[in-house]
Image 1 (cartoon, rainbow, N blue to C red):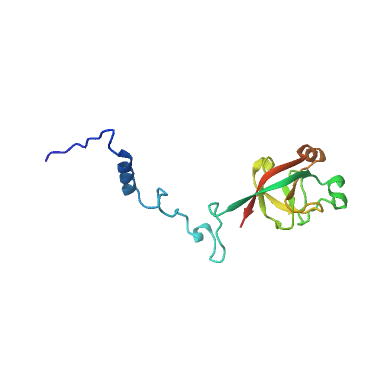
Image 2: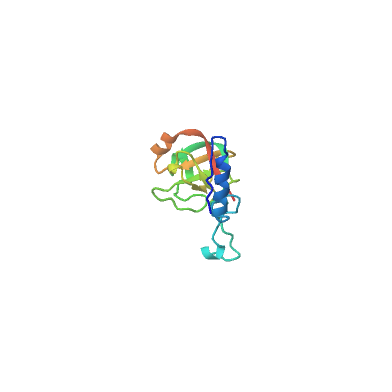
Length: 161
């Protein structure tokens, strides 16, 4: 039996042929093309049927332009409420990173503030008398750090559940 050699010229569409071969060899779902991603079963992650499993794939973030100011637990920043306990009941310790936000953002809401906490998510753990609407206060250990932050207008990412 004689083998026939395939000849390709510059006019031969090679890419569709390679794609067809690639897709016929790889099982559905492995390449992530045209199939749902393969995720472990919720019970494999230790969840029961009553607990929803939140994956980073299902987390949504909303971007909100906010006026972001720095504050610390001193009487200048907090007035008579400078007792070291936030509105959520969190006892402040050295090195804490959290934000104070308007009531529309519940305690525990995750936010990413560019330039604060290495741009990692922080929780809403406090409120403030002057914090209304799209305003946010980021917590610092010292008054000097809060003053250095100053006032910034930033695109803050808010986790939407």
